[in-house]
Length: 275
Image 1 (cartoon, one colour):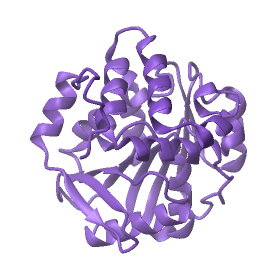
Image 2 (cartoon, helix red, strand yellow):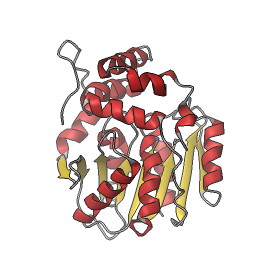
Image 3 (tube, rainbow, N blue to C red):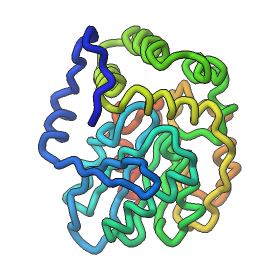
Image 4 (tube, rainbow, N blue to C red):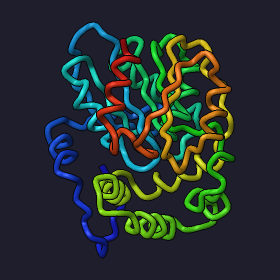
């Protein structure tokens, strides 16, 4: 996949576990008829259980959910998806439908995080027969939910050149403690996506409209973390109000990225959701 790293920037190699995962599993490309490119890793059919499809958030590609993919790949088919940047929710829904039909998956368990969970609602609402279970993790209802975050300021994202956006995110990430999350985020910032795709995804988040709720999916779970600085309790309550019949899960840790920071608790909860 195309790197967005300027030659003067350090390589920001991935953590060893992420690198091993990516090297051991082939990356496939799928070109939708609208000209948008999708990428995915697929362990192939394991049994007759519904496949697990992973849609991480805006920063990076499908590999950010590698710990989930590894946890479930002996139990069922797992497809981790890198979706196009800047596409409308409708285009993303149509593209995912085309991808899953090409892979002959049948109904799937759809796990989404943050921006991935936001547009997953468009897919589940449009193609409810394709979704046997829906996980909405650490997600927003619309762009107003992140309007107070400087890195998601809509006016700035609309006018700033992409190199400035990357530079500001670099500054924010390098100010974090040197831990696994920081390492993954910096690698993804420079190597996960083309810079223009990442910028386009951020604009989508900042301007996100409220999408129709996927009310025809019976098994919906809304997940949040008590220490998520992006999806605050107010935002999480908005999501609960959209899905009053959904199961609720509040993790005690994990921030905005429990699939990276606290995968053990998340995986345990996902097994209950999938059962």
